Image 1: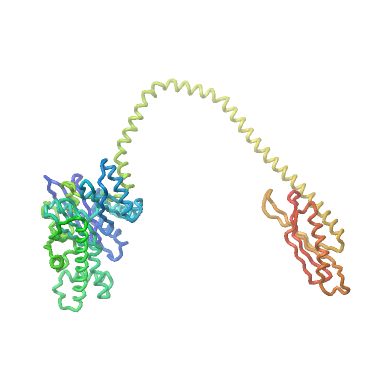
Image 2: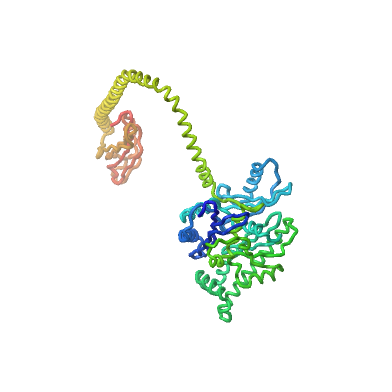
Length: 546
């Protein structure tokens, strides 16, 4: 593509088209045109972007381009804000404040722009257009995968206004673009425009046929294309009623939305009621649609000839252009934006991409500045080079004793580490020795206390350690038996009082030892009334580890 020409890519829901325009003496010239249908199931929106990438690769379109995004991806809203003095920056502050209130998402989650429609000195009428930032990023990724670098992302919903101005059509008319997923209604007037998106399009007709005939969406789409391509051949067939009924339903719904939009338009203070409708968009060629609107809206209806004032280069494929003549108005509108007075447009390219582009444009100047800065240091460097050499020599002489001191310091550090390790080993050995003596003294102490209470035998003694290092906790588990001398003569039954009088003093005697701190668990087995089995869990004094 020539660098002086403008490449525009229109990303429709069911097709993608690319047009290269040149400008000569204020007239647009179509230099090249390509278009291709997107092959995917139109009912599954997630398949649209991969199909778009595949089509762009097939068309071999590449380079920088203005990209037109589908209206179904946009949120469009007309608002009025107070007229403000103080320049564009002050106006942008007011508009941003209003955008935060009128866009149903956080502004950080969307990419948005605005178009001033009119300003009477009291109020400014603004058209807000936004797109989810994630959707814009996905679209840019799909375009990049297809070899296209988007310079701007334009909203398709307002571009017919530029085409209307370029073609020099009459004032106060409706331009109705009936697309696949939605229809866009635009009222064009000399002092501004009114835009409303209608969520009804060709896919709604396919869905109605699918529901009526009990066919899959893909099968209904194929049947729809074949029927409306040659409706006369199917008249009289039983199935033709499904198509006629579905088409009538969709046309009535669009007609109702147009009437509702005109009422809303009049409420905004626009007293002139439109008297003519221009149709565009692939779904607008539905047989009988123009006649229906003329009767339903009581207006003159005709198809928009967007190529009326376009010069065609010999290289343009005339047959292909004729097939897509109803879908070229948005391309013409974007091409005409830069050569007409009062053209409208927005840029929904994500901010991070705009910042990257701005940085790339500044990068050569930054490199040049850095080079100039470096070159400016060469003369002073040459001037002081001799002094630097002398200073290096002095520094080397000074470094000699410093190196000796550094070596001594490193040796001292190594000796200090060795001493610390040796002290640790000594402390461990002292702890081991102390623990050994504590064991011996503990056994002597326990034996003494057992002898004091008489008729007591130890069956098992076990140390349970918990924790690690200096925070270890020691528990001593004792299991044994003691003789119970009760008041009953035959001692055939368990005497709890006698048992308690025996077990309690023994337990208190144990924990009074300097080696033990307290007890945690005490359990007894009274199965033998004369021989009482017991199990103590005693907590060892941490100051006397074992």
